Length: 323
Image (tube, rainbow, N blue to C red; front, side):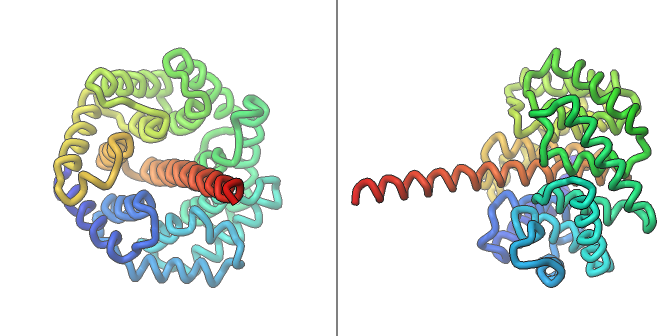
């Protein structure tokens, strides 16, 4: 466990918590994570500058200004040539829509990932590969495959994985996971991450063992934690060592007076799993992990927005009926 990085993260949370009061706590924690994973003190001015660049290059009701806005601004803020990246991401976003993807918050992150991970001249190839892979998933799982699969489709498009081989292997991974885990759509998301590892059987076995060990130690793995579980499977370490790392991080954050009250136990486990993974990953797998966590954050925030919308709607109905 890297205590220095955890302390940096806790300090980064305190900084951003005071600077961006209107952002949700999960959004601020994601931002603090990204900076901490890159061993940087959070730069709120750089995030503001990145946000302004996105605003200048997008229309008022663009999805780039929606749920994924602050996440993209944070990821952008640690890079050079931000204006160039945003313009390129906007162009790729239009390419993705033209080929058949629907506008969405997920598609903005997919476009951003392609923009920062693909060299000039490969954009069309990657977009076409992403669409071919997505269509293949949709054909296999018509009702499970949706917009929340756009980011993973983009990451597969960026990779060197043959699409036909990828779809075949994805089905095999799903078959192995479904025997042990009954999380429906989350199994598909985990399978997409596992596909990026070459040794499929070993990766699947490692994931299941980490899952079972956490549950045995009363660190219950829920559906919101499964993306992180998939990321952890990319780590070529003994499952017991991985679980020990997760628990050390969890206990450290849970016992921190500055941080312990900010998250639920389930969210804290998700965060601890992310830290354990990032401590052991590098290269393209680091980028995959960042994309996966961003995807998961969007899912959670959209779910929270739906709950709030239902509460507001229910309150309105009650007020109206009382009048």
